[in-house]
Every structure is written in C-alpha cells, then in structure tokens.
Image 1 (spheres, rainbow, N blue to C red):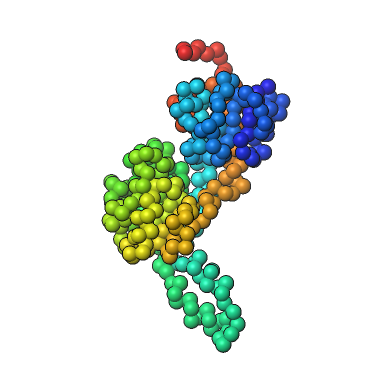
Image 2: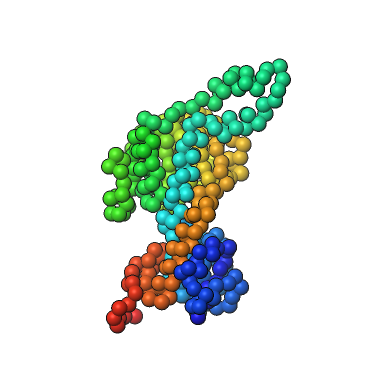
Length: 323
C-alpha cells in the first residue's frame, strides 16, 4: 500500500488509476510516498525521506522547489497539454474581447434605464462607441508553439487570420500538428512588428521575464492588441500601462490581474480562468495519477520537469539498472 498526500482539492478521477486497494490518498499524512498538488506552495515544506515523486496537476511548477527535489531524488511531474483546450478557448474569447469592446458594451448596457428615450433608441445612439475590427484577415502572432500555442495558431487559421508562429524550440510532434497555413516567423521581432494581435504562450523563465517591455511595444503597431494567458510576469505591466495611455498599444487582455491594471482604460482582465473547467481539471489529474502510478510501480519517468525522460513501460522481462 502506497501513501499519497493531496495538498489541494483534487478531482476524484484519480480513483480509476490509483485504486484504493493499492493506494491510500488523503490530505493529512506523514511520510507520503508521493504528493499530488495543484497550486499549494511547497518551497517551505520539509522533504521526507520516503518521498518518491510529486505530481503537479497543471503545467506551471513555480510552486515547487525543483532543484531541492532533484537533490533528494524526488521526481517532479507536471501535466503539459492537459489544459490546452481550455486555455485555447479562453484565448479565442480574448481575441474577440480585444476586438469588439464587448466588455465595455456589457458594462454600458447595465446602466440603461427608461427615460426620455426608449432603451432601443439609447442603444442605437450609443452602440457606435463600441465598434471594433473583425478578426478575419488580420495577422495573429503566436509566440510559443507548445500544446496551447499550437492549438491557438491552428484556431487562428480556422478564423481566417494570417498566422505567424514563432518558437525556436518547437518539438517535432508539434511541428507535425501545426497547420501548413501557419507562417514561420524567423525572429521574435518579426512577430512583434507584423502582428495585429500578439498572444504569448511560453513558460516563465529568468530569461524571458518582462520580455514585453517598452522596447518591444515600441516596435508594435499602435493598433496592436496584446494577449497574455501564459504568465503575468512575461509582461512589464508599467510599460504596458504607459503604452496604453500614450496610444502606443490598442488593448491589453490578460488572465493575470494586478493592482496597477485595475480600472485602466483598454485593459481587459479575467480572474485566471485559463484552466478553470471541469474537463481540464479531470485531464490534469488523470495525467499525473498515471505518471505517479507508472513511476512507483515500474520506474517509468514521463513529463518530468527535473529528471530526464525514461519511459520504460510495464516490465515484461527482468531489467538491469545501473545506479
């Protein structure tokens, strides 16, 4: 019987992969063999000597001390791509929100009241202030062609957009799945300079923190829309805010609200809804549950963020390992 500690509320779909006859899964537990986590911070946790692995039900792992885990021989898994469709759908909503001033229009309609003019006349007189461009025929720049960026790029093609994709580290599998209509951008500058809509789909690293700053914005069209559904810190918020005020950027749509952005004109904020679907949560938990099971039972490592891949599969004959 293996013990697995849950640090967050986890979808119960793991029962189909981690049966109760083999695994004891609970919130309160001493010396677990594995941990399942979503957003709980683990940097201050003590690592017990029994711990074999950590499964993060999601893609980002900034809440887990990866180097510390590796030093203790603990493999950390995540679930890349499990929430890709959910985020893609929200990005598509973001494209429409960036174009048609839908959020502003909704708020304006809340203030409509019968008076000297009928509601219908007020609507006809006021709707012109919410006019915005169509997506078809516009250039969509997708920075990062991982599981989410790939789907966004292909969806952009389906919407009739001219899609520019940039990712110097694109995997072979993702390259095969990318629509042939997506044009290959040779540099980040090419995407920034040519796109009407720019959407970010890269992990946050020390190297790309604040990658969209005043310098990058100065090379954009002043009619460009910037979308950030990846990580808030990829964008220098102060520079974006100043660009919006000065008319150097048309709109900023992000899933990462910050105090400096609240109430700013031409900013559309959503409360980190990217993976907030029941389907996404189930997919993430299924993936990490399988990874934990395969590692504990067979030593197989798939989708680890701190150890090399070693997809062994189920043993069908004796194995020899060298430590």
